[in-house]
Structures are given as structure tokens and as C-alpha cells.
Length: 325
Image 1 (cartoon, rainbow, N blue to C red):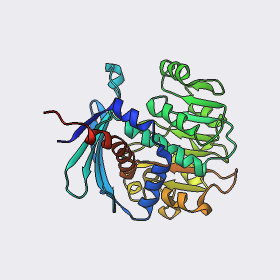
Image 2: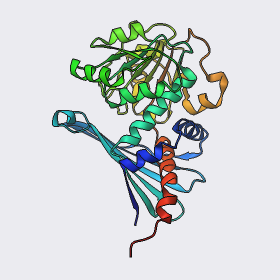
Image 3: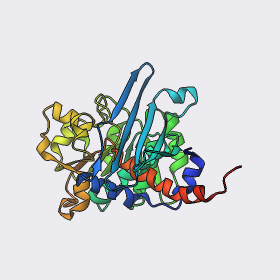
Image 4: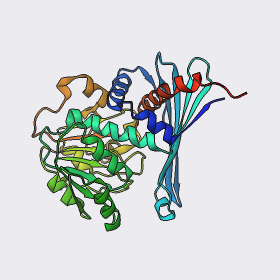
């Protein structure tokens, strides 16, 4: 029988895991062709609005393959429910036996997405951050800010949200000694103040416009993970000195690059994959004046790396425990 691991146990295991190098290694392996990742499985709903992603695969030579199911239903907070849910299934690659069901409630998806934002910032963000801009005041907007603090120093964040209620809660929960939180209902104010911006909304029309973006800014877009979603004006990508994607193949079907290419704003010859950037210092940020964009649609190798690390941390204790008779 597979082991069912609840969220509390997952979080306990994560306390001893540094996911940044794990996610980096996953991206590098992916760009080297060492990961088998089939196309994303997807369900999109209109009433109520929501989507479900099924991402799966394995790293060649690994002992496991992973299937992740994660959902986002954006009206759930009106019902007193979290907008995201999900689980990860860890199978033996040698036998096909299901070893673990990680009932993470979408937490591991949120975590690996936030860690990917930190990985991008590590290689592409300006060294001197005037302020961080967060577009989207939900769970991911909080986690992105938290993980950015692991790779860059900054004392101020400017946060855009859809209403004052969520912005008040964001500031209350995230402001701390050494970190001032300013909130706004006008996205242009984020762009005016910040030179490191992360967008994490389910928007289907651009939230940021090209004329607002300061030269030398880095933007990481993580919300546009279906063909219908878009957070950035396509002209932002057209004007950028460099455009990075987590997956070249996925960017053909979803994300900011998908939108910009379809609009004729950029050609695919301008793209470079994140795993290549990590592995080649010549592809890191070249200067403080460079404007860069990273389009993260979420790759199964992230789910593989984080769920594998959690299961390897938990499995010895579970398998050595005396069995009930």
C-alpha cells in the first residue's frame, strides 16, 4: 500500500531541505535533455473559473517518476476555501509501484514556483534592488517575496492587489523589521518603484504595460500558465534585452512568450531556456542597465525534484517503522 503523507508531515520534512539547488539542478537537467516530460494535461473551466494541471515525468536514471495534479479555482475564497489544491504521486520507476501519495494541498506546487522565482532572480535580477514589485497579493505573491529575500537584499516591496482588503492583509502578514510593504491598486506604481518585479495573477489581459517599465528592470511572470492567461504587455518582451523561458516547448502553447509570439512582437529565436542560463555564466545578467524577462509556465521537473526530496526525507522513517499486526 502507498504511504499517504499529509501536509503537516510534508512541511516537517521540508524544514531540512534546501530546495533552491534542487530546482536549479532540475532545470539544468531538463535543458540538457535528461528529463522525460510529456505535454501538460489540462482542464479549463469557465463557470466557476478554474483550471487543473497534470504534470508528470522522470529524470533519466532516477528511481522515481512523479505525477502531479494541481488545481486553481479563483472564486473559492468567496466560499471560504483556498483557491489551490492538489497532490503528488511518487512511483517507483523500476516497478511502477505507487510508493507515496503526497497530500500537499497544492503547497508543493506553490513552493516550487516560488523557488523558481528565486532561482531566476539569482541569475537575472539586478544586484542593487531599489524595491521589489509584487503583482498579485495572494499566496504566491507572499511566497515569491519570501523566497526572493534568500537571493537578493532589499528593504521595500510595492505590492499590487485587486482590492484593499487583500492588500491590508498582505501588509499585516508580510511587513517585518527591515522590510517595508507599500500597497497599491495601480500597477503602474509597482513599475515606477521596483526594478525586480514578479507577476503572479490569473489575469487574461496585461496588468503591466511596456511604457511603465524602467530600464534595468527584471520581470519574472509566473501566472500565465494556460493559453488564455496573460500578465505582460507583449511589447515588454519585445523591448527586453533578454527573454528566458523555463521550457521552450511549453512556451509554444502557453505563457507570456506564447502571447508575444502570436502578436508578432518577438520571434522564437530570441528565447533561451532557464537551464542553459544557470549552466552558463555568459548568459547571466550582463549589466545593471539590462532589461530582462523570465516566463515561467511551470515544468514537471520542478515537481519531480521537490516531491522526490520530500519522499526521500520521509521514507526511511516510514519504512523502518514496525508494521501493525
